[in-house]
Image (tube, rainbow, N blue to C red):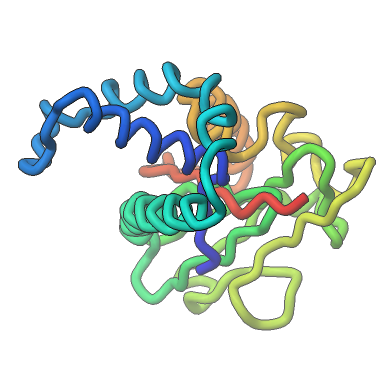
Length: 221
């Protein structure tokens, strides 16, 4: 599966928050949630956001490289957890779909089926017309392969840079300023697009969905 990755700026903030917490004399060798919680990390991220560029501007290229290597290691840890959670949604023998760059996949599991809705970020559009093709499916009925406009493989969609968005339905695009990564980090935004997808899926699937997952692809300008 093409891994959904965290943007470079976010990764920098993550490591800075981690280092800032250590600087304040807290030891996390025990890795107890009470000592190193999400709320603590999130607060550190907010505190250092405006200082990041000033601080890193004084580093050498070797220091930048060192930090980026550590950031990648942290990103890999988070990504593995995210992928592990998604694997639990997949029906047996269904492969993980490829996540489109500059967009994402919103997936809903229904018993022994999984439906994924390709979505593009603002400023991008699908390279195939899919206004009436809101989502793809993998299940026993599809012989555990993904329905797709592409020949073979697990690619469900490609998001190409475009100043207009006409190939997909209006709900297949993330709003301007709310790309996939931003949406995924906001519970209400994620719930909004999930509710829309559930209403679309209800037209062909009468069984209530069990679990949902938003997967985000790389952002390439």
